[in-house]
Image (cartoon, rainbow, N blue to C red; front, side):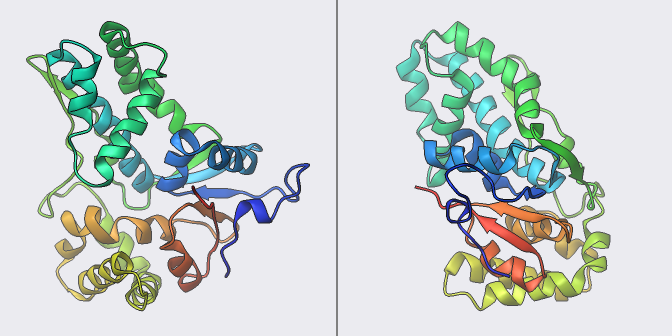
Length: 270
């Protein structure tokens, strides 16, 4: 099934058809901190409400949004001014730095550099607003793996906040092995499709998934194998219903969705 750019499927007067979408993590993030064009495309697609997502998406959303929020709160508590906070928030490698800054702007609604005001907004974001933003337009959050990491909340000890965003394979806190056993053939089809990709990240994800699924040890699909591989795009896609269209900005779903016989639309970013 083909991927389509949303803008190529709609007239200037609005949606041609109303679809029920299933949001992946990239769509959830982009509709809040993407470019003006990307946010407008996603808003138009989701305006009818009644869409779906999953706890694997929530786990990744929390890792990005709550993780950044906790970093921001800790930076504020040791900073003398906003420049100190900016310096601390940008000292992360790779995409982490840009995401830190995007989510910081979402939290601070950057109309002030007053640290007390931003701290209040960050605390509100941690307690309430992050969850509200995730659920807007969504009436179904699927939980096929019973992921307990998605249910975790940040903690604070001695004035320092922390948030554990991973799990260990020996922890018995989910139904990931049973979920993947049920969907093994489709998951393997997705893994093979990714391994055939010319993109290195896709190849690596596909190989990790295939090896984990071929291992007879149930723990092989838990822990790092989940949050750094199979528990990401593939597990997210497996919970998309047959009558839904997976909505994303990630190219990996151009391979995953056809392999598991699911429709998808990819929003072009930039």
